[in-house]
Image (tube, rainbow, N blue to C red; front, side):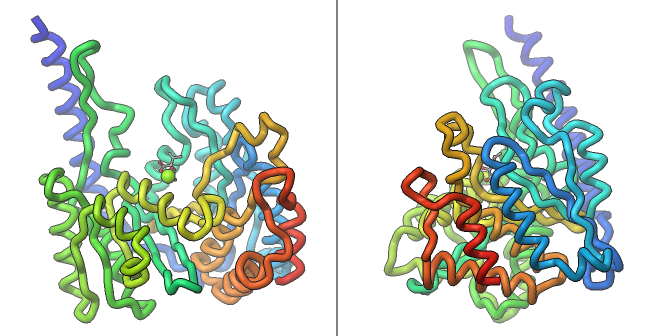
Amino acid sequence: MLEQEINTAVEQFRRLMEEQLARQLRMEQAAPAKNFSKQEKIVIGICAGDGIGPILMCEARRLMEKLLADELASGRIELREIEGLTIERRLACGQAVPDDTLAAIKACDVLLKGPTTTPKGGSMESANVALRRELDLYANVRPVSVPEEGIDWIFYRENTEGEYVLGSRGVELPGKLAMDFKVTTDAGTRRIARAAFEYAKNNGKTNVAIVTKANIMKKTDGAFSAVCHEVADEYPGIAAEDWYIDIMAANLVNKDVRSRFQVFVLPNLYGDIITDEAAQIQGGVGTAGSANIGDRYAMFEAIHGSAPRMIEEGLGEYANPSSLFRAVEMMLRHIALPQKADRLAHAMQICTVEECRVAVTGNRDGATCRDFADYVLEQL
Ligand code: IPM
Ligand code: MG
């Protein structure tokens, strides 16, 4: 009696499989990554986002205007405001990223993005997930450091497949069962593994933790781990260790062992979860930056959400811009301006670790976003 429904679901599964295979093929044939140091002009797109986004972005912009004053004056760098990535506009168009906004983003080299709201339920996809897919931003890179504890971690989270790629396209027999699909491709895993091991090699790291749940997710995580080890074989001197995500979640709160970890490479959903945990260890999700990197485009953003509750309670101006500032730092590194990134990192170190004269708490008892930005600008 459910024959019809099962047939429809099987048909859908066939289409998904064909589509994913085509994606795997495109990745195999991808062009090499862009080299920014050789590029004459770099366009930085700016999308403020929703909720606290515009408040934070206003300060991030002031920061960039100071750090990049020469490049902006000479025209080597352009800051380009991009309209339309707001929840109102997205709902009105019925698109996670409206077509004209996506076209404007694709005309830039890199994007600095504020948090965007994802409506609960319904079929509207998250703007982040859509952008990561449309721009093929396969490496979600999230550093976490707590110098006084010797913690210096960097997470390479696979960003385009796993549980996310078909997350809005599962099948269900209402009232009976629901199924979602998780996808791991060979080429998709190889490129994130390569990014993690290249980082390790270029930064004197000796250990990469491959974090999966391959004892349970045997096909997808099994393949992820196997491909990571194939890549690891090309990097003598860098140890590749397998860890399961559950014990890794425990290890990160175990002060006796956590500082020995250096680089992590992991599938999408585990990466999502554990990078929030890691950011919390550093001082909260408001403190960590996030880079979404592909071979052609890259997007830099705060790790936290748009905090609609802060706006409702009139607390928007007390939001912490640190996460977005860290994203700016990562962006500067990515576009081959490491000295400017270092200047910002140094100012942030003074403002958040060494001196901490101005503290943002997210509440009226703390400093405002503007006060904190003034403080960072003063240290630049
Ligand atoms: C993140 C966020 C996103 C994710 C959400 C906003 C879709 O949690 O960047 O970690 O799940 O990847
Ligand atoms: Mg997350």
